[in-house]
Amino acid sequence: MRYTIGFILMTLLLGACKDTGTLEIKFLATYDDSPLVLGENVSYDDYQLNFLESDFYISEIALVNGNEIIEVKDIDFVDFTSTNFTLENAENGFTLSYSEIPEGSYTGIRFGIGVPPSENATLPSDYGSDNILSQGGYYWDAWNSFIFAKLAGKYQDSGGTFDNGFFFHTGTDELFRTSEADMNVEITADNTTVIEVIIDHKKLLEETSGSYYDIQNNSANHDPLEPGPLLMLVNNYSKAISFN
Image 1 (cartoon, rainbow, N blue to C red):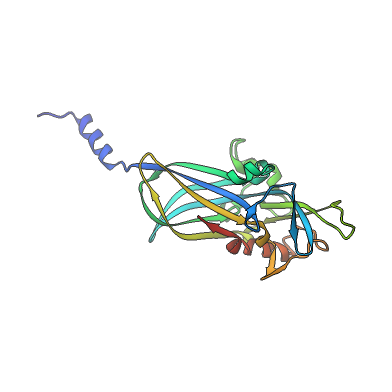
Image 2 (image 1 turned 90 degrees about the vertical axis):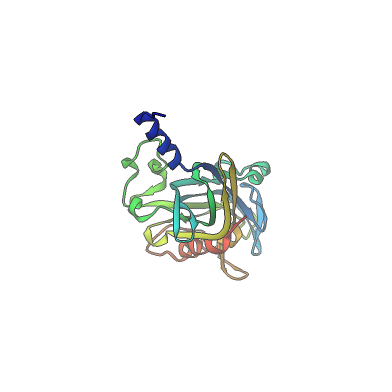
């Protein structure tokens, strides 16, 4: 039987191709194990908060298989601010979907919270309008850094009103953090695997076990030269994030 060169090359290529599937990462914002609905009051210490904004860059998303790292996406954006204003949306979460993930059994997942140093050395103007790093509102010239995450809202003052706001913006290479979980992740051909990433926003603001940051007297900080609450915030991701 005679075979053409084209047929042989095609056969070799098809044999080398690995079947792929889709990975969906569903991010769920919670507060004390309940869905976090932006604009609704939640109990905090001995007063209440009202979250209005929560979003962040997620980067270097990868699946782990022993010493093997399979890159899923270099950088993306989780935007609870655009979705979590109803209970239904908060329960559904914010989903990022990635196709063509090599089929296999993986032992973990990892990702960064923020913009990695290599990309953080760039500017929004370096990117086209369809790139998430082109967002001018997520870059601060005084830092020479992208804003990695925004957390903002209103807090109840001593008079019981919510006339004052709080906000925390993280940035600079020193505040880049990585989150990782050991878990079985099965990617099968032509199927979708869903991982849930749950972020407890109350734990983000916990200074020590059972003690919370004093927002009423320190309601804003985005100064990298005085990073106290910002360090608390980024370091708390490790205990605020759980996987399912």
